[in-house]
Structure formats: structure tokens, C-alpha cells
Amino acid sequence: MLKYSKETLKRFSEPKFAGEMKNPDSVGEEGNMKCGDVMRIYIKVKDDIITDIKFLTYGCVAAIASTDALCETVKGKTLDEAEKLTWKDVVEGLGEVPSIKVHCSVMGIDALKDAIKKYREGIKPVINDEEECCEEMKNIGKIDQ
Ligand code: FES
Image (cartoon, rainbow, N blue to C red):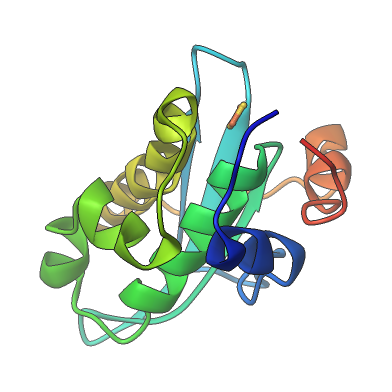
């Protein structure tokens, strides 16, 4: 059985940034080739500052906890500052991440970088409310992995 830190389990069970965002300025996505899970990050941007951020994912405990921590770190930062964040910056406050789960905790950063790239390229987000995956992804925090 995997051992997670107290902080990781708290983030997982009470994520502050989980959920969909209405009218985001950009949406980034990243898939994890090792497990097939998907991460989606929504951002609102004003004057180059990320004013709001949310995420949805199929991912596991590590993916949810690290992405929630990422969102807290990123909110209020400029796009340039957010883009420079590393995996280490994000998981620093989570205690030890099991080595087998490191790839899960990188998904959020990659999805964020995708959202920033799309925003800069002027690619407008297309959200299909009927997407089946969104219904599944709304259950984050309720799964036991
Ligand atoms: Fe797929 Fe962690 S994100 S197992």
C-alpha cells in the first residue's frame, strides 16, 4: 500500500480548486501515458495575472493533491512566473510523494503550461458540457486510489 503524507491526504480529500470554471480564458490538458489519466486546468487571466484557476482530473491521490497545491501557488502570479514553476516547487509542501507517483504529480504543471501556451496563442477554449469525461472528472476527491 502506498504511503502518503498527511498534507497530501488533506489536499486530496478537501481540494480547494477542484471543479469546472465557467467562461475560462484558457484551458490546458495533459494526459498521462503511464496510466491513461487526464488532467484539465482552467485559468482566468487579467493583465497577465492568473486571477483564478481550477482543475478536473481522472487522476489519483497524488495528481489531485499536487494539482490543488499548484493552483494555490499559481493564483495571483503572472503568466511568466507561473510558467517557470517546477514540479519541486509544487510538491514542496506536500511532504514525500511516492516515487511511483511522481509522474502523476507532474500532470498539473504540464496542463497549466498548455493553458498558458494556448492563451498566448489566442486559442479560445472550447468546452463541451455534454462530454462524458467531465461527468467522471467531477467526482475527483471522491475516489479511493
Ligand atoms: Fe494516473 Fe496517478 S494520475 S495513476
